[in-house]
Length: 331
Ligand code: UDP
Image (cartoon, rainbow, N blue to C red):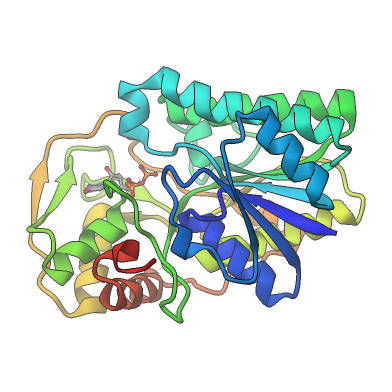
């Protein structure tokens, strides 16, 4: 049986595919390549290009391949873009999930691991945030992911499709071999932007606001290495295969770093000056997001290996230096 990775050409999905292949799993990737990169997909995975909102595309894939588990990464994920184009986010993210679950139901595929997000919590009522805390998204991206979680829950109730929803905090880093990494166009994420400045392909970092309710006034986030995240997905697959019931888990390092602290860590990790200026706040950003990941540790047995943001940044820096243009220089 094979594992279907939807969005396997994206940043997190491509790291997951590589990890699964290294574990000798049979892997099928589906991706529409609207945001992912063909060159990011591991050579040992079978690739289908298409959009999961297209039911005939999914039917063709499920008919040809013996899939027993779906890992679903394919969604739009940029907060500011979602504030400007909410309907695009609900159409792609929520619409894609509904069509996918219908196809899974009809082809008798009963397990899904779903990429959710800390953005489902909105402005947290306490810190660190645990899975039982209130979910009140403050942007359409987070709202779309919360809707997707709820939709899978009811698909589980009605059709027995078991799920694990993993609420990611801020994912960063790259495979240490430097073969794959983060490459969004346009880039909006903090770590790759800082590293583009370090490399000299971007002039300076804009710090989006220094008047937040945090110790140094800049936003605090919880950064987790992409390979630790991939490991959590592998544990989640095993958790469902062992017959456990559907559940939701936070994935973060459980410690917070401000934008200013990330900048300083990157200056140390790269030995570069990295010019920065304070710019206006970005829409949709809560002050601070820090995970309580104790449930993933105790229930899934998750044991993240990267507990130092400098080490996380170093793996991303290795990728950035090896591929200054990201995937643009690859086939
Ligand atoms: N950020 C920033 N400058 C940038 C990009 C991001 O100051 O050029 C800040 C952003 O406001 C947020 C943090 O860095 O507080 C992480 O943003 P990112 O977009 O990487 O992830 P998000 O938290 O939105 O998922």
